[in-house]
Image 1: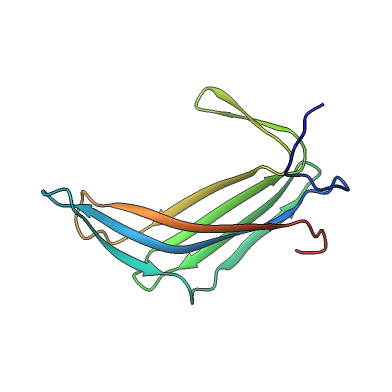
Image 2 (image 1 turned 45 degrees about the vertical axis):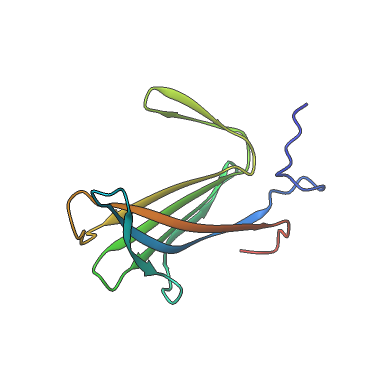
Length: 132
């Protein structure tokens, strides 16, 4: 039998929370120094677009509209049972309580075309099944 530390003693899948705390626009200049602009999301309330629960997973989709005109969408799956997904020609196996996160950033006003974004996330989980 497989021992999954993500399942609590009574067999319940723990609830979780993922927060997008900030987005950093990163520029590596010619000296190798990292220069970045930070957009803190402490006061941004996400808009819940969709929630769903099936016998296989819990699904959450949220949207954050930023002051700079960008939109960030978070899609979160938390698997309740073992699950297999085909991605890029490979089979990915997810155990119960595994969390899969997809982040889409739209309309980000990059300072230069060679910059990239770093997303700073925070997560926690709770064994209480009474959360929603």
